[in-house]
Length: 154
Image (tube, rainbow, N blue to C red; front, side, top):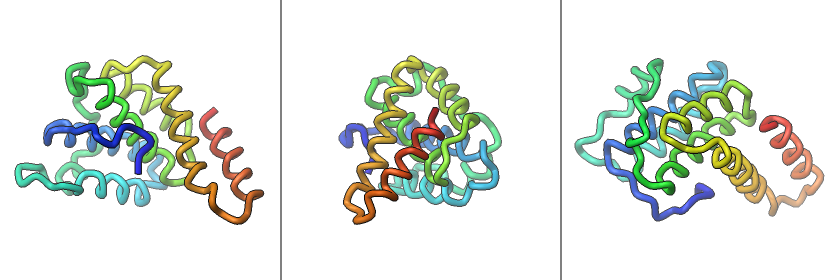
């Protein structure tokens, strides 16, 4: 599903922090939250741990910034996963706004990810989203979506 290493594991606390980071991104563009919440809920509720905080409780507290630090995610692969999922949330409504970019850059900074890696992940996620459309018979529409993705990311 995501364009990053699919063997990366997060413990329950990390999964909760990642979900809070995604909710932080979703709150940026208030008009498009429904699509983003659906994606975030699916991430959080996959492989539910009985000790996990209920998703609705996280959603109720989503106006607060996620308490992220450089120690929240120990490996580069975990940080890639968090930022990539935040990017997928940002694109869930079909637009990647400058406010969403700022929110994701802030999240990445708080977990210790260099801005160059964020930019690389933006490109990777865009390529992933375009590859999902590659099998459509209407190549002109795919090209148009590709140009729109580049414009919203730029």
